[in-house]
Amino acid sequence: MKKYTNNSENIDYMTILVYYYIPLRKEWSDMLIWDGAGAEPKDINYFYFEGDDAYIVINKDKVSKHERHRANNKIQVNYTLNKQKQDYFLEEIKRSLQDFPRKYILSKKTNGNKPLGYTGLTDIMRESFRFMDREPTIVIFRSNFVSYYQDKGLSKADKDLLGKLMRNTQNTQEVHYNKVPSSLPKVDEENLNNLLKDKAESIGKPKSSNARGKKQQITIKNITKKIKITIIKKKKRKNKRTGRKS
Image 1 (tube, rainbow, N blue to C red):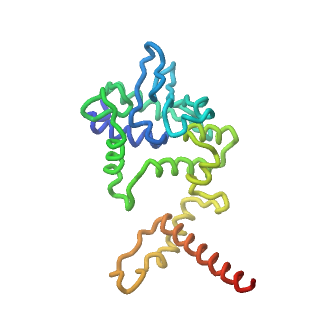
Image 2 (cartoon, rainbow, N blue to C red):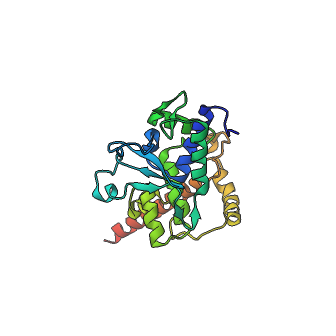
Image 3 (cartoon, rainbow, N blue to C red):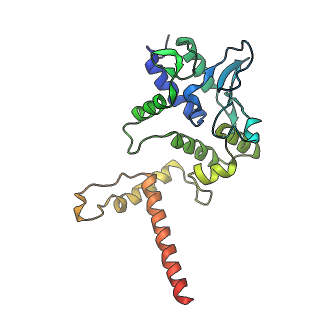
């Protein structure tokens, strides 16, 4: 029995699925499915099955010009990260391709012989998360992926694998993608909810009498923004004091 009745629903689902499990940059938008016949493709990115697993080969992306990434361009689909094996991901890909045969992992909804393309990809993300207070982007998926695993405490081997999946370096992940700084105390779900509750009153207040009672959403993003503003103000005051002393 098919999970979805038409390829439009199927591609919507698969778009979110692939970026949840392996958040490449835009390479999923034209990922060819290679059947193993003939020579391996050299100038395009492709996906293929091998035994009980499957692999992605990245021949062309933002970092493919660097030797380090050219030498590590093969990604195992059913990878093991932090002792979690992604069996569900591989099974869903197999199910999708069996129900809706096509040439690309993400094809056009009306033509499986043509890739979805970057515009089609971003349109699906925008529509799927239209209820959010900010437009979803590939960067958000990549940031969430790194933050989730970095916060679990990874071994050296796991960090190397994370870098391979992301097609970048550990330093890039820490500086640009990881939104859970190691200096912050770890909190469980209950403590986090309590934190949000404690901050609700102060964050929820209108900025001025002209705010017409509109409140900010109580999110970690708003809390983080408030903390950053406080830190910047403190630094400015400290710099002023230092300047007067000199």
